[in-house]
Image (cartoon, rainbow, N blue to C red):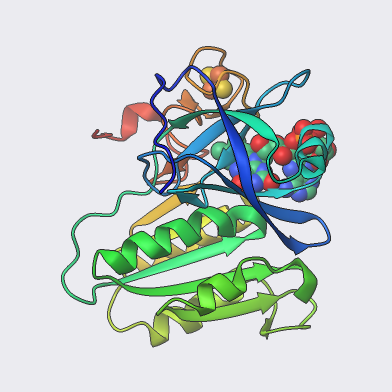
Length: 264
Ligand SMILES: Cc1cc2nc3c(=O)[nH]c(=O)nc-3n(C[C@H](O)[C@H](O)[C@H](O)COP(=O)(O)OP(=O)(O)OC[C@H]3O[C@@H](n4cnc5c(N)ncnc54)[C@H](O)[C@@H]3O)c2cc1C
Ligand code: FES
């Protein structure tokens, strides 16, 4: 059993890496020796000495699990770390996916692209524990880019894999599989929960609007403070990704805060 984070969320806590799993040539999963009470879709700010801290979605909360693609200075520095090394974490931060109590086997559809799959793994586990029937679509450019598929296959979920080059699963983008997944889902989903690149989120939002299905979108933005102070993560008119998101139950690029009653 790992130790629960006890610090106030805005103070970083030093945690050791207890396990590292290589997902593919550019992505690793880091399991930390610590836990948080968090909702899927929430994130933590991770700090390494000498570098600006960066947000990462929780792929798991107990123990804290982060799946990281090496694309730049911070993420490459993270990839250099070994089991037993320290990193500094503050959180959980932001609003996660809303998972109301489900009727037995009530359907929910998860759609993930790139490392957006990571928070959806956490969400899939929570939704299954809550009695939902979980369907999931995971996509990437090509087979080697798909991540966490084994973890999803080990769960009791209806799973569709897509690759843009057709090297595994259905050829095309995740959004091409949405109609198929909806047709095979037993009943109208309580929600479609998506996380991934902006283009994917916009396509999912449009699809769900056309089918009148509630949507929850996990958004990304450049973050500095992670707690609503600096304004660097504004995504739509007045919406701060770190505070109002990163999960929004609508398309924050199109919606004015004045139009939308936001509970919580
Ligand atoms: C709420 C939230 C959750 C996040 N969760 C995760 C997560 O679970 N896993 C994760 O790996 N990252 C996640 N990120 C992104 C992460 O915070 C960093 O932005 C990322 O690691 C790059 O930081 P860097 O300093 O290494 O590179 P940067 O210097 O910030 O980026 C280097 C270059 O890579 C580009 N780039 C950034 N991200 C990607 C990408 N995914 N694919 C291709 N090019 C990219 C940038 O535009 C830039 O040109 C999340 C961001 C947010 C806001
Ligand atoms: S990251 Fe500073 S306001 Fe959101």
